[in-house]
Image (tube, rainbow, N blue to C red; front, side, top):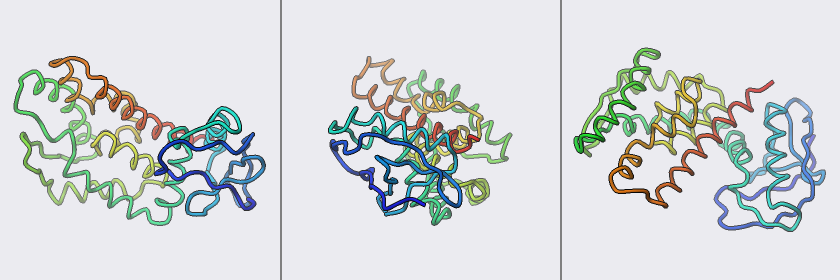
Length: 253
């Protein structure tokens, strides 16, 4: 079993933290799974739970990011340097104790689905949305029988009870790793459809993030590059990629 462990900074911690360990390593956990030790002491999550993940591959990825964070003992790092740890912590301390709460949180995005809110001008943006978003909604209809309504303008769109029920039926059987990954992807892209496509392997993470940025890319085509907007889009894509990598590592043998 893990010893009394060191606790990593919480995901909400702002600013830099000082590295207090020299080395990281993975360890087998009695009863199954793998932990990560810093200088021989197991990591504990902010809620006090020992970090224990289902695959050696994920544990190794977590150990590797701790090995790199801050460079060396005494160096500085931020929680952004530990994406696999953050998502694993969410899975262990938030999703696993109450998966239905995570499903309920994800279902809030059904009525706000990005792909269902279309512009009515300018014409180039309308055409781009149609070209890049319609195929994803068509996949949802063909693969899962969910026909989501589409609107133009800014008025809220409420999907039918049948659509909400179908989404609930899709999400409820998902394992904790998939729900944790969706908990990162869906808010990042404002799209439960694109999140579902990534976690089911229907769409690569990078392509999903690109599809989610149609409006921003169209804006820059019209007005020119915007450094802050490009930075935000890169951060969005990185979140989606991190969540997809986390799920792949969870499922590794």
